[in-house]
Image (cartoon, rainbow, N blue to C red; front, side):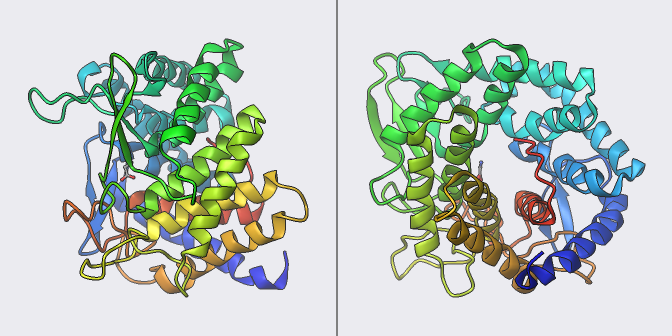
Length: 374
Ligand code: GLY
């Protein structure tokens, strides 16, 4: 490991010690955001359900600690009830079952995990709108709401479940659906400058684009930083599974936007394009997600381009470790200063389980654990 990465071993030790400690208080549950030092638990239906078990698997692959494995398995088993609650399932089945069942299957070959992940992939594929070539994101949040034409940038990270299902079964349908959704994202979400929309609404009958919506970003034309990070990592993963240059080009364009808009400490505010009168707290989770995408991108580009991406990913993670990490307090979260949903005022300066997860995934990659759960 080069000298500039001396911090990585120390960070990994801090992470493994802390996860051993917090696994005893968090248990087989589904933490989302930490408030006053303690993780608030979410229902297993919430999109974040995979991150804690995924984090346990990341640490388990090094430490082989059976207690961590058991917790991850218990979380996965709890999600069986969610698979049976059809009305509450949305497109985030990708996040949820990739980091539980696919991770378990890839690490230990568990056949029950494979069955669960394939079932989730089938349910996810069933949300595909053939008129508009997009995966429908959500069900109605309120009685009578029509979300049938809604697609969101986050879904780029749900596609790996479909790519994996095609590889596993030899059936190309899953991959075809994933590619058609990714193509829609390239056409309608990613702007020429590399910034992205969070939400686009389509006419679910004609498939025509109706409008872009701000969603978790400041507005339809702003640049929500976590959405930008989803686009970097998701486009790189689409390239990883298909080898098609258009996805690599998209990932690079979005990565350039992200990296060139980073402030001095390499960790973005919640939106890159804010009017001066709007508060701009950090979203450390966006930094962690983008770092993972950028490090994978470094493995995909040629040897001339690679070092710049590699260094950018490393610098984001190093700053998260040194300036945002909580290593010796009583706080359960690992990475401070995440913003979940600024427009709704939800968790605007908190550790977030997905910030923790992606920080540890990036760190694991720098340690040499390159098994992709995605
Ligand atoms: N997938 C929702 C979010 O990024 O907050």
